[in-house]
Image 1 (cartoon, rainbow, N blue to C red):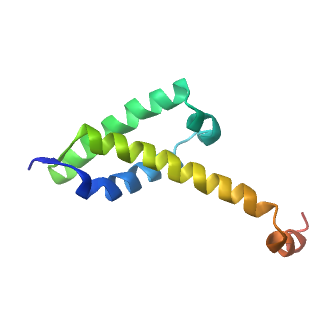
Image 2 (cartoon, rainbow, N blue to C red):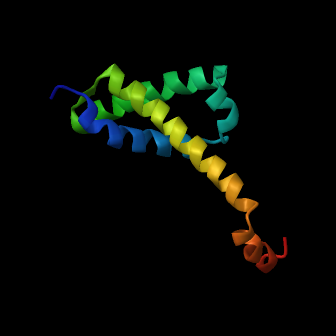
Length: 103
């Protein structure tokens, strides 16, 4: 039981990504990525939740640096995924899907 740093960064990032993605109501990643009050609130809630989760489940105290880095990586991952999704919807490769779905 002790403070952990970067060796848990991918795991904490993944966990936070899932928490952000499943939030209800959905989060406007475009605005959050630009920096908003919603981002500040989300940061406070989810970083605290992550630290509490790792402590209660694994007995590990996450360093503030790890949680901070994981949070912003999670936001970036989701933002990039959202951008790629929007780009792919307007490509010729997806025309057949639109035709199939009669869109």
